[in-house]
Length: 190
View 1 (cartoon, helix red, strand yellow):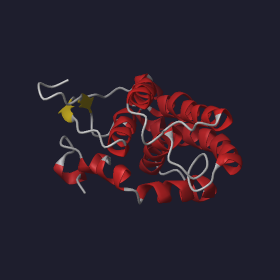
View 2 (cartoon, one colour):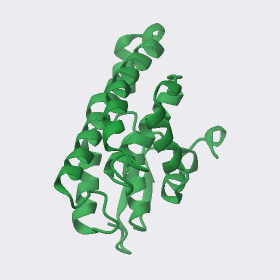
View 3 (cartoon, one colour):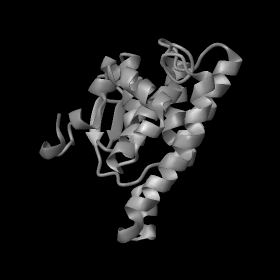
């Protein structure tokens, strides 16, 4: 916390994890201070931060009241944050080797998106789980951006693409976008 009582977010503009938290903060209208860090690593702590925000600032809800829907949100969030995104992080790509990075990232994202597309066909409404924005949606948008960066053919995933387009129209997803962060390089700014 700052002296003014604002929470501090240590953030890297391109980090999927930071982006998820920025979306949550924007949805919950929480004013915060950003301290940019050159964070070329990600971790699983962002879901814990989002759950903390949910417990301390419960509106708008990012986890549905309905236990079955809440379980679906957590399943989708964990699939993306724990099963897809870590496999295409810079640390993994370095191990794969320069010449194989694109193919590796495309393969891992496509494999995860094949599973995710099937799940979303049974859970989606306007968004990942029904018609209310949830933690799952906070995970989806940054991962679709990663897929676009690695040139994954998103026409194979119509449900994912439709949900992503709907979410990107929302202000919270726009203000939290990596192209609009204080540490975004000028050539990548919106």
